[in-house]
Amino acid sequence: MPRPSTFTTPRDLIRDASLVWLASGIVGVSFGAIAVAGGLPVWVPVVMSLVVYAGSAQFSAVGVLLAGGGPIAAAATGLLLNTRTAAFSLAIADTLGPGRLTRLLGAHLVTDETVAFALAQADPVRRRRAFWVSGIGLFAVWNLGVLAGALAGGALGDTATYGLDAAFPAVLVALILPTLRADPRIRRCALLGAALALAVTPTVPAGVPVLLALAGLVLHGRKEASA
Amino acid sequence: MNATVAMILALAVGTYLFRLAGPALHGRVELPARVQELLSAGAIVLLAALLATGALTESGGFAGWARPLGVLVGGGLAWRRAPFVVVVLGAAGTAAVLRAVGVA
Image 1 (cartoon, each protein chain N blue to C red):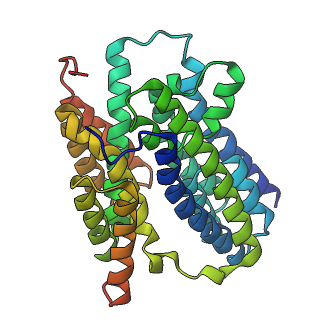
Image 2: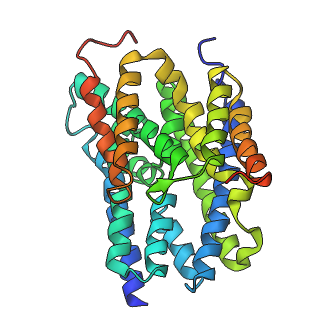
């Protein structure tokens, strides 16, 4: 088996995705709690999570608001962080499925995690299933988590205590490592891109480093992949 | 509060338009195979950069040792082809234990 660490049956998919759901739910709870503890009314984190639905952008926008940065700076910061979703949506456009409504709904579910889950699959049918299953579950738990956190306040404490901040990079490692291992061209691009992103992180606004990482694609030669 | 509503709406609409880029173009513009290949590679490059910056940095500075060491343990487990659950819990557990014993 070439990819024993990724799911091959629907049951495996749900088992792996449920871990991401659980972790995202807890982060959602902390988002709701932080926003309300900072003085925002309950509806702000709740509505924001439903219509914006992008964890890092929501944290940043609320962070800017609570720091007194003003709504324009808050929206700009969040939008800058979310520009990467345009690249993601282009990459998995044919994964969402047929039909206009399916694509309009699916677009809202494009996140780092769902794209990683989808791209971990080589087969188009499995890819579509991975996207929708992980995406619908993630949308549900994220919003329920935010609602619970906004209502309950700071009962959970600092989620770093549970190491949740290390869980998300690890999810990405687990999902992209099989591709990085199998494709030396993508591996070269990813290493250069990650190095560039790290190098500029201290000096540029949040959201810019990962966009600059795309410059790593210069190492992607023209030769066709063996796949 | 109207300014907050406007902020949420601007962020929501803008984010949705970013997300719609792919589905909106799909089927109308026939992307060359080479472009499609680069887009797939680009998505992995973005995820790798998110992983690197997410593991090592926080608000533009170093995230402390517990998180990257946790992610490193997760990466080692993934390299050994450990199951997904083991990779993620290994990373979170390592970071949690390191913090519990006083490693920031």
